[in-house]
Image (tube, rainbow, N blue to C red; front, side):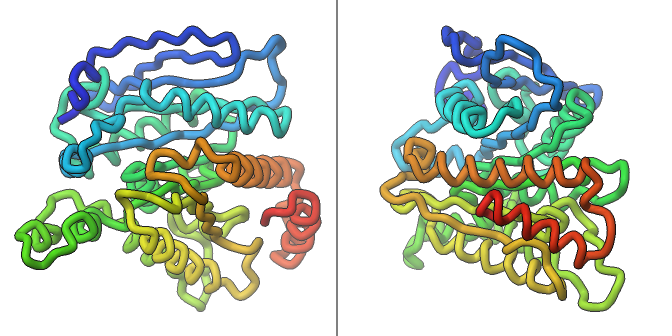
Length: 348
């Protein structure tokens, strides 16, 4: 179903914009899968000496989501990153306008979408593809902090991807410093019942039968820590939840596809994980509702820009804080240092 809308798999990159640079990239995942994507950045007259902050944007789709989209009489973007360039452009402009650090947004189509190798889309396949993307980012930008930004099912993919990455001094997990979930699903079975709420319809009962469940809510809940030591994070997802500025959950007030309670459920689950630390750093996960926005329209609202700007500024501040060595010492020492940062950035 990667050809929805018609022609999306053969669409070429054409950008006539003097303010941004859009480059096409190809990433190899194993011997048989090649992934196509783009990097969006802002034109700069001079090269920066500070490593850029990288946003990995996930807009993954699946056969079931394609079905949801068609059922709602809209073709959507169906996994083609070219269709998201207006949003990615605004994302880069919003961030570059708030601090000097360069920002690069990497958006890659998973298997069967855009120019990526045609393979049957699956949960295991998508996780493999996006792990390869994260590995590519880590190699291309070895000193850059990475923020995952997942929209719609891309948010559910981001959660499950981070949940699958174990922590370690040299692991991919250590590169991820933030997670933004915009109108993300709790799971595909839950979405089936949301789209078909009537128990008189057979579709209502099909949720448990889907092959790819993308159960983001369970992945978050599984991050719960034992109160007995050791309490070191065991996955990238757990690390992001526990480390400031934690997770930012964005919900559109008038989302016509994803019920608002799904965002509430993920916030509640992530907050419980964060609260299990006896002396947690920062204020924990946060959820904001964008007034008047639809499922794909939050980025057109001023509050979206303000929230994204504040969150990414927090990630950049923490990254600088760590590189300067302020992250060393006791948990109490780090807490005091973070409080001083909080006074400056008014976020975490």
